[in-house]
Length: 242
Image 1 (cartoon, rainbow, N blue to C red):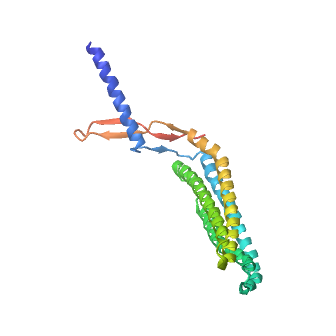
Image 2 (tube, one colour; image 1 turned 90 degrees about the horizontal axis):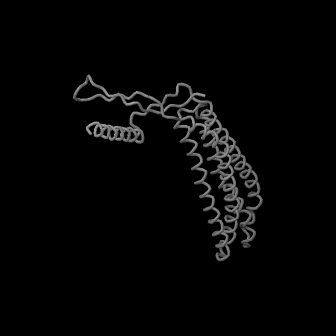
């Protein structure tokens, strides 16, 4: 009878100990990462994200420069229509003006994004750093796609407003058409870059996650009552080197 009670007590003790260790793991207590050599697919994930981002920023920058050059030149020709009392004749100028204004911002974002990619190290700093940056770029692209939908909604409002505001019909219509064009481009751009990022890196992310496993890592817990007695809990995370 005593043996049965003792065995039951030990089972409860082991279960409690296991739950305690799980609690420590979830809260990040005493977790070590044993990765003397970074796996090849972790660096591949890092470099793939940077390569796609550089190409995307060059594409956005080219769109911005092209818009600014073409619309800037056309503005010089259409500016003479501003003196006209015909609101319809003013539409091209405001359309081109908004295109220039909008792509000044696009060019700044493209330059900043490209420089950010260049300034990153050639290799992933850590497992969590690579995964977090990949998740972050995908979140940003999805958020931007949501903003693009808002731009299209604003464009629709401007075009509708041009029908009722006869005094500034040319301005509302020109700006609305420009925002419709720029918002549509950015929506296609952000969705396309997200799709490329996700489909190109998802297999690499899966490989990285598959290479993570629990492995023995010593964590010493000393008793305050007796410095000579220590209890060793074996818990940790290790990256397999393949």
